[in-house]
Image (cartoon, rainbow, N blue to C red; front, side):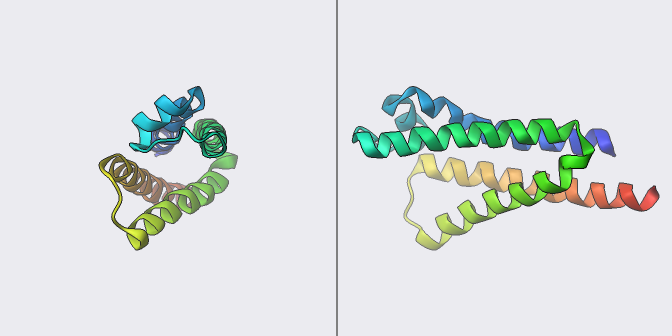
Length: 126
């Protein structure tokens, strides 16, 4: 079961690392989100967001191989993906690029939920 949990957290990690490319600038941010980030203040905020997602993704990868950090990773992951999904759905009218992010977060949610169930089941056997 632990190997499956590891794979699921690696998937969640890579989903969170994907926006890291946005740190390279407005063009890359446009390709990620389909929006213009030419205004310098918005560009700074979104590039910083990209870095934070990279850190978050690295934490998921680290926790995939360090069982003691997995409960924290599950909690942080659920906060991340559920909040984005709810914000997107409650706001609505988002573009195709944002829709791809929503789908990625739904995949991450399913991975996290599956990992939590396996984590709980593996702890019951111990």
